[in-house]
Amino acid sequence: MDPELEAFIPLFPPADLDDPASARRYLAGLAAAGPAPDTSDLTIEDRTVPPDVPVRIYRPRQARGAIVWLHGGGFCMGDLDTEHPWASRLALGSGALVVSVGYRLAPEHPFPAGLDDAYAAVTWAAGHVAEFGVDPARLAVGGHSAGAGLAAAVALRARDQRGPAIAFQLLNQPELDDRQDTWSARAFTGTPWMNRSKLAATWRHYLGGQTASAYAAVARAGDLSDLPPAYVATAEFDPLRDEGIGYALRLLQAGVSVELHQWPGTFHGSQAILSADVSQRQIAEFAAALRRALARD
Image (cartoon, rainbow, N blue to C red):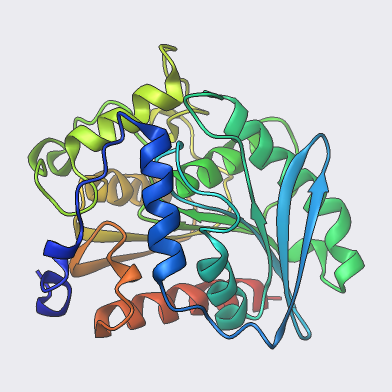
């Protein structure tokens, strides 16, 4: 493990995902304790989009593209406030308009509630980003962890239902497969922040006893052709690592353009340790990938 990251591991007390309310409070505390980015170069606005989905819009000067951004948290944690630092950094680093989505959380709202909210936000964005001076043809979708899984599901659903045109998908450490049968999912039982048992709890909450479909767990999709180009980032010591790599390879085999970045020495969510050099490189590269994608003619 990267030594700069390893030094922080003892400071991460275990979060019990069997108690989502407690886990949400813990995540909110972590987010509030972190350094706030300078947002003086952004215009930030809260809205509610149809049917009743809260979003927070981050508008840089002269934004050339837009991304609908979906926070992480195992489908059961996180909100617009906990994601504020990351949505801000993404807008500042990429120059893109960021529409951060406060989708409904499991277990109170199991699948497909979160996906429906994410899809509604993308549908709204496709019809309204022009109001912010952004070309609707430069609309991306992305997220971290469970949010990346939702982003991939939105892209799949938009293809199948001939929905909004999505130009790019930005997937950081995506949660894609409820089966947990990859090597990393089976082997990483004691890794920091996310491990096999916590991952299983997220799927229990999200599925609520349902059998997973391809829209719930995108790794189950049989046909990945005609999906948007993708950037996929994975962390070495993450139970989600191999499903992210496997999904990127399957996209490539289906004819989809993919950039895959496997970050050595990292663990799930370790980019939150901002003092580490590898975290700074991850954050910068993630924003740069979006900037490159949305700058294409």
